[in-house]
Image 1 (cartoon, rainbow, N blue to C red):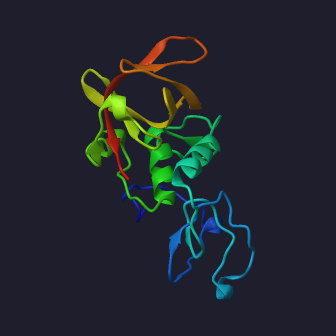
Image 2: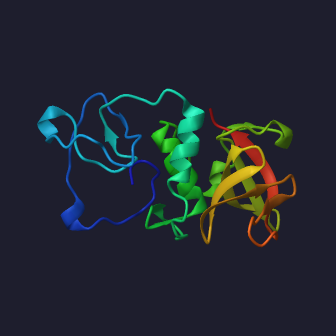
Length: 182
């Protein structure tokens, strides 16, 4: 993948090469116009680079976009509604905002500006550790709420100690740090 250097796969029947001018990253799940490539607009999936305009309120946009992934099953290395992992989820959301971040949680933790837990804001990334190594990431979507991929994309309670599963009330991840990217 040119975007993050990861090796992936694409079926031959799905591959079409287009060259577009004045590119931006598609912000909708699917482009609403179905014109041909000569008009500059194509039917595309979220995260594709196409022409168009941008959303006005990034915080509401981030929350709404992240919630569209709710219930998507966890798949290590996935970046799609049919399967996604924690770092793929936040990478896609930030790609749509035209902010490039690395693919893995441990690498994502190295970018951005450190944020104190008390100062967390919508869109901040929160990192979690296991044996003192970052291995999980989520995104703040409101005070005391984190969206992350664990079993599936879900919203759980965020505390300074870590993530508490809203259903089982058990701690699932231990807090490490937080970063702000915008």
